[in-house]
Image (tube, rainbow, N blue to C red; front, top):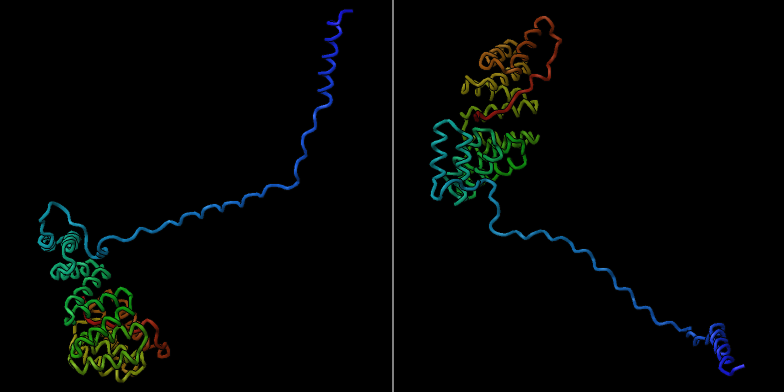
Amino acid sequence: MSKHLLAVPLAAALVVGCQKSPVPSPPVSRVQAPVPAATPAPAPAIAQAPKPTGAPVDALALPRSGPPGVDHLARAEKLRDDGDTAGALVEARRALADDGEDVDALALIARLARASRQLTLAAEAYERLGRIDPEDTVPLVQAARMRLVSGNVEAAEALARSAVGRDEGNVEAWQALGRAQLSSGNLAGAIQTLEQARTIDPSHGWVLNNLGFAYLRASRNPEALEVLERSAELLPEAAVVHNNLGVARERTGDLDGAREAYARSALLAPKYVKARVNGERTAMLRSAPDAGVEETHVPEADDGEE
């Protein structure tokens, strides 16, 4: 056999043997590499409210309209004269865009807002007028009335106290304060305040009406009768005064006088429900003397403001 033929199988056997017996890998160390600390996730960004820029928003003013130089106050007065109260109010508020302390514009806004029963807007205009002139009592009195009618009794009382502080001889300031105290249920304070108003002006019919109302609420009926008789003389066309007088007469035992006052009140204001109900009830007392007094005859307070 040839030496070359024997050499080939031997080489093949050596190759197969190398595959069955691979060279062992070096041993793996048991010491593990340190695991890097986890990086904390970034906290979510908190949205920041935009910082206010520029002047604060004027709640009374509206942006100007039309070309530069338009006289919005003149426009407002023209619209008011034409009977367009809503349009006049918009133009008057635009007049404040350039000057938030334009007293003519503020006075017009107050009157127009009051006429359109936007009482909060009217009160804000009056309050600003009061801040512009720290010696003027009238705007504070008017603002107190608007706040009271709109139901903000606390603000009304604070404004009325400020008005009294500016001018202790102003009967309307004292009356505004007394009405606010009546609305808050402070009868003792209201009586004291309205008596002070009465001292300043003994012939102020609405002060006497409100004082009489306070006395009725406090069940001081003879005192109520005294001031309401005088109030009815001073305000013969005021339906609410005659209704309150009827209550005072009824409570002091003068049923005929009460029926007369209720009838007068109903005649002056045919839609005045309380006066009509009170008149009907007292008419029934002739045949039903035990009918008693109904809650519907509770008197009303008023200061004669339109």
